[in-house]
Length: 230
Image 1 (cartoon, helix red, strand yellow):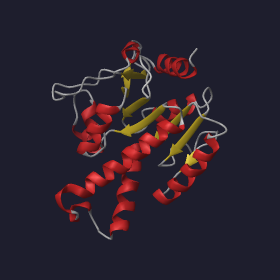
Image 2: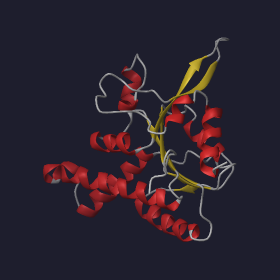
Image 3: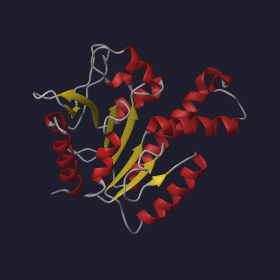
């Protein structure tokens, strides 16, 4: 059940190398975390991370994590990034269906099946961590090449209805971005108001305390406090 007025699922979006993985790795120092890494982004960091190269490997390692969680319940699960997870699900599904692209399945059913499989992973991950989950998504590379204004949640590197699922179901949406401080130095900032006029049905983060956060340190402290209940 959803715990109000807290949060269960936070999604962090941002360009490659903007600090998303580093931030989540830092949380593992304070919170017992099952960290699923789908693109080997944690290789440079010390610690215990669950690297995943395929859906077959994910199913095996997730089953092992689920068994471990019965005696050592984690505070948090991280899925980094879910756009790479979606790609793995697509590859696994096409192999299973013996097809070369999802368009071979009529009426968009292929994409619906992929979306449902991703939803199942997210829901299972929240149960694994007593309903505390952080997902990471990248910004589409072509968006970074074309964009001249602010990045918004519409720019997540996910397919249409999967993106809508994340937007509507996650309790918090955060954009990591680099900004210039008063000295002209590039620093990491967090933005919980990454909306645009195109997003007619998007209400933003349900957990209102997220909107008070402006720095990674503030976000880290809020996550730890709300997860540990202190």
